[in-house]
Image (tube, rainbow over all chains, first blue to last red; front, side, top):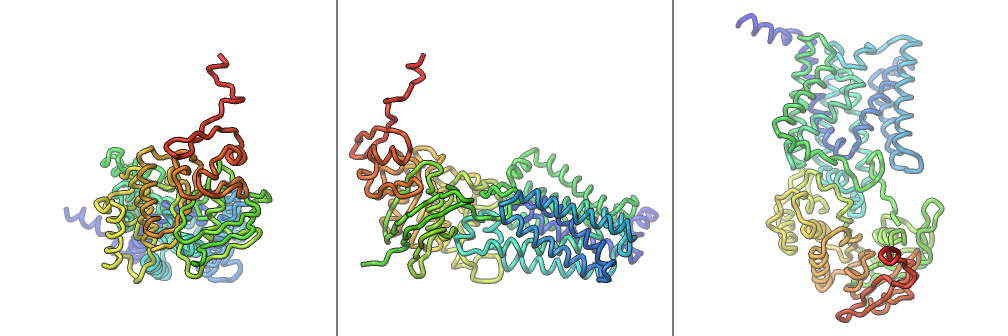
Length: 299
Length: 256
């Protein structure tokens, strides 16, 4: 019993694990909270694309002599605003344009890292997350973004809810829908930036989506969905990081697998009732493929 | 004489090079109850959006009365009924928040209760929106519109896709609201079930073809011009009743 307990608590004797554990929990909470808006607005694809775009910034920043977080942050912000602008115009296929921009940015990142070598976080860590990659600055960045996200969602709760549910009517009821979309994109880009070293480029979209979908399976209330999704994200992040240490698997992978396991358990426990709640979860009045609200004339 | 709520003067709207509306002049007066009638693609929704202010005209001008409060009720068919909100959540979301935390104030909760009571769905406040009938859904959106205390209510095809009983409910409800002084403009392509029962109509086919009472607008020449098909107009209980003209139509039964 004593040996088992020692094995269980052993990782907490290492500072790098404690930092990783805290960071994974905070990253899970942040993705869980934000994921509610992302999934209900049908922006999961944008989250996935944006994480790939930010990868380009990670690779380019050291080569340009800019601190990585600043460079990747600015790159992410510019990508988010560009995607937002592209998505709001329907003159070209928005999803195709976003696909081109984000994958090109990702490819540029891979090309830069291959040609000039890696001067920032390890390549594998950026793709799949790492338990070793967490510095104090990452932890403080996560705390800052999480506090900022909570503040934004608290103060703009009603406007964001209205914009997410019914953007057309929100726009004519005095809500600045374009501003809400932009704010959400900024929070999304900052969240991806803050969680990338823990969860990784390729897996961050799953941590945005799964906790929110599981929460939706459990409740019909938007308010409850917000805190449930945050809680599920936190627990999955913590458990995933813990398993990452023992199984020696990249942290992003174990966090996503724990999320998927929770999804399966809830699916079986709710016997399909939960799944029916998620049907058409991101349906929108607007036909925009990216679900960013664009008031359009219908003849 | 009271000032008009909205005046459209020679308004045109072009989308992607194609003219959707041309030379539309129309005035919405206080207390008016108007149905904009026309087939799909005739520009009804575009005209509604110009009145709302969500579209700007390509030509002409739209003059809105000072401090005009307009509320909008969308088509039921365009709503995501699986969205995780209750009836009360849905109603309160259109009211501008008065403090920095999400929880509604006591005054706001009282206002929601009052408007739900007025529309006869007070007992449904905690229900998920998916659990409502068609008539209840329409009442909920009316409640969401009314909590903003508008002087003009705009509705896009309020009886589209609903059953006969719901259509009657909605008509009576709108009539009651109009009698209380609320100006209402709605779009509809349903001549018999909706338009014929309204006090004032505007027949639209990219421009205003006719306006007036149903007896003045629902006449063969206007209906043919607007809907592009010849139809007969009968009189039933004092209301015009549009039926397909048998003339020139090959019935499948006759063709056998």
